[in-house]
Each structure stands twice: as structure tokens, then as C-alpha cells.
Image 1: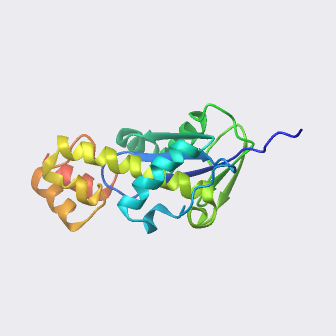
Image 2: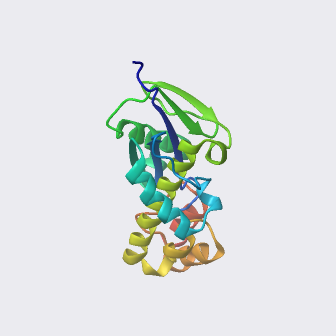
Length: 193
């Protein structure tokens, strides 16, 4: 009897925000327990994402979520920090997949085959599942940060550079969860120095 080939999907959430971590997820789906409705997390309502995240955690053969902190983003740059979070998610699976399929153009350094798939979050179910876990976990993290820093609106814009967020940065100054290497945050630091 041949062993099932384990293919994991990998995606991230939070490359573009000015605050908070970049979060990556890795998912190995179980072909015997399919999940209907998997899609790019950005195309799903928050309620649908939450429902699918529960199903993914329940039905997947393996899954893991990991992150890279704002200070790691500042130290390494956003691309390297994203790849670091992805590698951590793969390592966190508890098993070594035969191959990972990664949304986008770049693959993290891992000890298995890795292939980048452009727009994979819309076309590869395991990447869609990873996209959903990364997004729902990051949103929950930003909700928690909103409780700590209520003046910034993290629960609404999730740290992205919206006019509301940029105005709060100018008014209140950056927090420890802001990415100092991003230009609007740097400008706010100078304003509040």
C-alpha cells in the first residue's frame, strides 16, 4: 500500500499593514473530509471565514499558524519576515509534507519541496485554507491589539494604512506594535520625537 502524498498549502496575511505581525498558515487537507466553499480569504465575508476556519481546524490532516513580529519585520524587511513566518508555520505542522504550495512568487526555506503558485489562494484548496486561517488568526490578533490601543481603530482597518489609521498615527504617535521601517510610521516617530 502506497503512502498518501502530503501536500501542504501555505499563505500569509498582513504584509501591507503598518502595525501588527505578519501571520502565515500551513494546511494539509484531508481528501476524505472535503470542505466546501474554500476560496481566497479576501473574497469571503468575515462570518464565512470564521465558519470555514472552524471546519479547517476540525477536518484538516494537519495545520499550523505562525507569525513574525513587527520588530522582526523591521529587522529583516517584510518579505524575509513573511518567509520566516511561513517557515515557522511549516515547522509547526508536526509532520513534514512531501511538498508545500505557496501563494505568490517566493518560497520559504523549508526541508521539503516547495513551489510558488501565483494566485494560489484562489485556485489551490489547501492554499485557500491557509489563507483563511492566516486571515482569521491575524484579525483576532488585531482585535486584541485594539483592546490595548483603542485609539487607532485596529478592529476596523486591521493595521492597514487607511486615512483613519494614518490620522491616528499623526495624532497619537506610534505604538510598540507599529512597524518602524514603514514610511508613515517613521514619519510619525519623527513627528513625536
